[in-house]
Length: 462
Ligand SMILES: Cc1ncc(COP(=O)(O)O)c(C=O)c1O
Image (tube, rainbow, N blue to C red; front, side, top):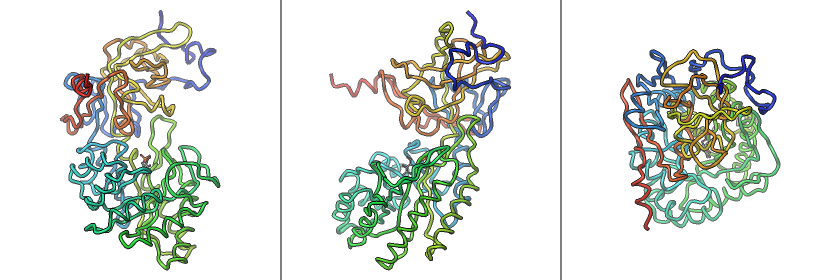
C-alpha cells in the first residue's frame, strides 16, 4: 500500500478537510529560521541542536525528549531586555516553562520572574531569584500562598479580587516589608494572533472590570490600607498576539483609569504592567514581529496616551513567557506504527502525544514536524502525527508532510515546543512525563529528569 502523496498535492484531496496545506514544502529537510531553535542545523543529514546530535540525545535520554537550546533562551532574554530597558522591566512568565535552571538563566540575563502559584514561587526562590524580583499572580491565591509571598518579600503582588486585597492587608499587618500591589484590570480587550476584540463586557475570571467601576474601587481599597503600597496597574490581554492594536485599546483604557486615580487621589501610577502574550512562529504562516519593533510600538502607544492625558509615563513592565522559551525547544519522538487508513490518510504514531503536548488537542494548535535522525530524498507524504494515548483527539501535528520512506524507529522533531508543553504535561494513561535536556556547545545536561513508573506508583497508596 503506497504512502506517497499524490504528485499534484495531497492524496485523496476530495475527502480531506479543506484546511489541508495546499502544497508540500519545497524541501522536506529544511529547518525554517524563526521556527526552529537558532542553533538547529543538519549535519550529514542529522538534526543537531546547539551541536548536539539528536540520535545521541535520544540514545542517552530516551524519547519523547524536550531538547532546549540554552543560548536560544538567553539570546531572547537579552533581546527583550535591550528592547524594553533600561527604563522598562521584563519579567519571565514562569507558567510557560518552569524549572530552576530556566529561572536561573532568565534571572542571570536580567529578567525578573512572574509566578502564579505557590509552586512556581518555590521554584523561583529555590533557584535563587531574589524575592523582590518576583511578581505573584493568580485569581485565587490561597492564604498560604499570600502569606509565603509576604514573608518572602516578593516585589509585587497582583491583586485580583476584593477578598484578596482584604487578605493581603491582613497578612501584611506587621510584616517586615509592605507589599507592593498592582491592581489587575480587565480592559474588555481580548487579543489573539490575528484579531482582537474590544467589548463592553468583561466576562472572564481575571482582574477587576474597568467598565463596572470595580477597578476604581480596588484601587481605593488598596490605597485605604496602611499596610499595602499601591504600585500601579496591570493588564494582560491575551496570547500569541502579532500586532499591537489590542494593546493600544487596552493602554488607552488603562490610562483613562490612571487619570481618574490622579483626579480622585492626587497620585500618578508609578508602574504599568502590560502582561505578556507576544506571539511566536509555530509554522511558516506565522509572521511574528521583531521584539524591538514590538517594544518601540508599545512604548510609543503608552507615551502617546500618557502625553494626551497629561500624565508622566509610568515604568513599563512586560511579562513574556512563550516569546522567551517557545522557540528554544524541540520535542523528539520515535516513530512507532505507520498506518495507512486507505482512502483517508496516513497516521504516524509516536511514543508521546497529548501528555507531553496538549496544545494541538486543546487549542487546535498547528506545528511543523521533520524527520530528524536522517534526511531523505523520498517524495512527501501528507500524514497526521498522533500520540499513543487512548483518545482519538490525541494529535501532535494535524497535517504534516514527511518523507514517504518514513519508517518505524526514525526520530521526528517538532519545533517551538518550549512553552506550554512540559508545563501542561500530564500523566494521562500513566505515561511518565519526559525529561528536558539543555544543550549548549555540543554538551547536553538534563534539567528535568524523566519520570519513571516508580515515581507514579509511589503516589499510589494501594
Ligand atoms: C498575567 C500573564 N502574564 C504573562 C503571561 C504570559 O503569556 P505568554 O506566554 O503568551 O507571553 C500570561 C499567560 O497566560 C499571563 O496570564
